[in-house]
Length: 217
Figure 1 (cartoon, helix red, strand yellow):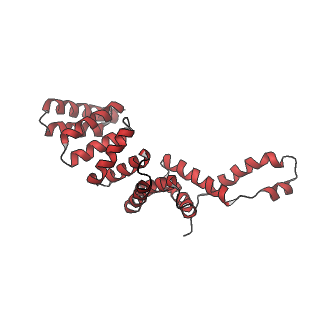
Figure 2: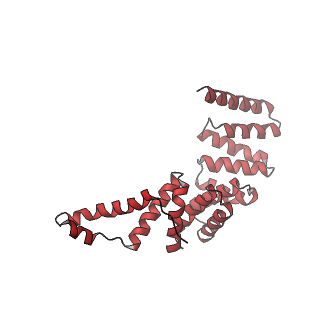
Figure 3: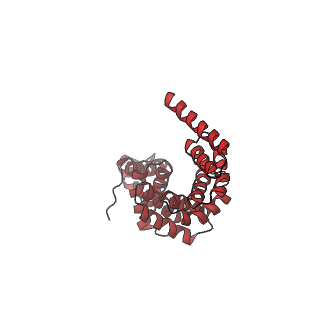
């Protein structure tokens, strides 16, 4: 499989290696520098791995994907690469491939809370709420203030008919982001189902006001 690495990433590799070598060749002629300027396979893979993870964290999934695929071919046991590549695939619409990779990572290192978090969020976003529930529950214990984990856990509970259990997670998510309209509406619908109409109306009103203020901003 031929990997297409973007020009900035490929050029960046040589810029980084070159900067490391400047101190070694500062007193040599250009010919000497050119003879010294070589990139080992390990250095290249390290660079592509770091750039791929950086792009993933920056939501630049298209740029991250070929880098991480190349790294995984060379280092199939690298859990961080597997984790970030799985996330990239999911974000780019390749959900089955992405979830398969994340499940492999979780199977090998189920005690890693970050792996549980990413896999749980992937399950929830794919509508696999029963599978998401135990993984997100574990992630919520490790990341008790993580907005995404709290919201998705609440949503999964709600989808599974466990509405009363969902409410505290929506409330905790709102404690992290009080202006999150989608969570306010999710909480409002949950409260409405539980017969708490006054609280539900208050949440609906707050969500409407926030949406109006955003439109007029």
